[in-house]
Amino acid sequence: MRKDTLKKPDLVKILALIAFILVFVWLVFFEKDNTVELGVDNQIDVTPTQIESIKEIGEWEFLSISNEELVDTIRKGILSDDHLVRIYYGTLRLGINMHQVKPRWLTVQGDTVTAVLPKVGLLDKDFIDEARTKSFYESGRWQAKDREAMYRKAYRQMLKRCLTPANLKTAQENAEAQFRKMMLSMGYKNVQISFE
Image (cartoon, rainbow, N blue to C red; front, side, top):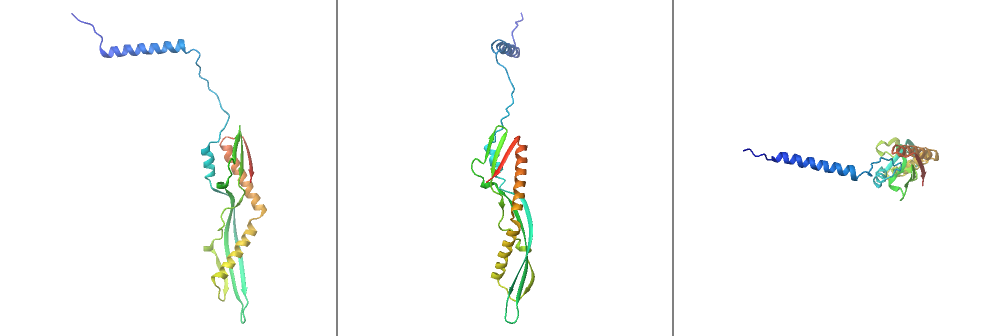
């Protein structure tokens, strides 16, 4: 006499089928009102991480001006005059320092972002390349303090020649264009920029 019994794998299959049927029936009859909807949120939010990453740009250069200045000095003597003529080379970099932004410098309302950037100015005050400085003509004895006085004179002349309103305006226009381009690439449609 042969006894029919369910094997263990067959029992697992039957239980899995019953569980599937129960879940299906429950979803069909009890969850009729559940729907899935897809929507688009047109609101763009600037996250604190994005603001920090923009601030981490640090010094942002928008105009670089290479300059050279010829500086000379004469020291009158009894028998002869001493002359020293030197050529100084420098590169003045104009831009903004993003570490100087004020709190709430970047605000968003809808698809419009408003930014108040620091004033455009000289990024590096040590712009004279002393390694390239050359003595063009030298007669007599000159001390370190004489050369330092000539350096300061060349420094003032470079500032006067390069930090003009026109150059500052050009740097500010470049800053505005680059910042606007960055904000537009982040998805903002309207970008309003002003400077402190």
